[in-house]
Image (cartoon, rainbow, N blue to C red; front, top):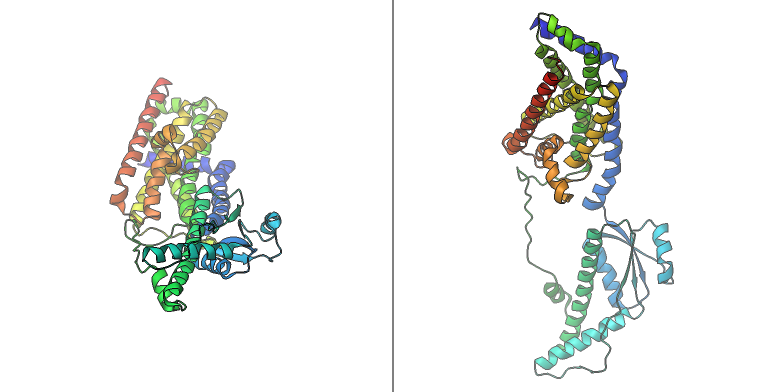
Amino acid sequence: MFKLWITIKKDIRVLLRDKVGIALMFVMPILLVIVVTSIQNSTFQLVNKNKLPILISNQDTGDASKQLVSALSKIGMFKVSLTPQSRDAASIADAMHNKDAVLGIVIPKDFSAKVSAKSKHVAGKAMNSFGLEGDTAKNADTNIDPLTIYYNPILQESLRLSVKGALQSAMQMVESRQTLRTLYYSINEKQLPEKLENEMLNSQTTVNEIPVSKDGTRRTPNATQHNVPAWTIFAMFFVIMSLGGSVVREKVSGSFIRLKTLPTNYWVGLLSKQITYMGVTMLQALVIFSIGIWLFPFMNLPALNLPGDIGALAITTLICGWCAVSYAICVGVFADTQEQANGFGAVSIVILAAVGGLMVPSFAMQGTFKSAANLSPMHWCLEAYYTLFLENGKLKDITNNLAALFAITVLIQVVTYFGLKRKNLI
């Protein structure tokens, strides 16, 4: 035990001399998590909270166009702004740029007249089907001119389809309202009562929303909940920049060979490095989580909400840190120079992060890359963290993720052992 403690003290002193390595392990991930979270926060707010700014150029003066504008405002999806009536379709793009709107709609001049003509035609057909006399002029123009939607190219296709669906729903509401009024007047020769109109048009069917989180909470994930765990994992694996080079230096200096002549075991040296740098990874997680909890609110970013099962969070962080340290030692064992360890280490970490879902969500991957994600230890770390942070899961919910991560770590340890034997270092 004394030998292990002395070796740990030696590794701590070596670590403290590596100023660049400490900066890469702490400063770089902190800057990364702050910058990326700040950038992505606006995207999450756009999807979850903000309304899409939309400009409407209403060329029509009838009631139907006003009803359409009102219906779009009530949907709750849009922040509606009206342009001057003189604004033509050709200049709507300039107006969108000036007002930072991502959508624009032009309502044609004869919109209300066409809606009225179509409603009369449909009501006349309904009257005839009842055996009553209705207006069904054969030559009546019942085709409503299409509305034109202008959109910013950055708008995602899924969001554009949602906008198109919302617009068609508002159009259907306007046409149905006009048809009901016409039909009621044709039968009763008086206006449709507003209360009856609302009862006929407004859906009374209740839609229940049930979240599928582990504890049934309705908390909406935000940029912080996604980015802080993801970049904490990235920071842990970046210990390779210090630890990998340290292993190479000890190989080159002959430290492993000298251990053979001393009354100790090489396992003491390897265990010392793992304990020391696992402490570093735990400190990294503590620092980044603390920034998410206390600093982010002062930066107008959502605060990090810790999961209910803190024990599961600690175990996940510990196993993830052990895997990161094991990988760094493995790279250091097989690299011949410090430049090789740093170069290969940095590139491989970025690749593992990309494949593992830190940069692109795993569910968005297809084919080979989706299968390759299972080989990345970062994938299993991230899945465990997401279950804890986003679904408020418990330890039993992440058992499979931790088991896969533990298996990968043991495999890396075995590969490291055979690498040491192959190079006659032990």
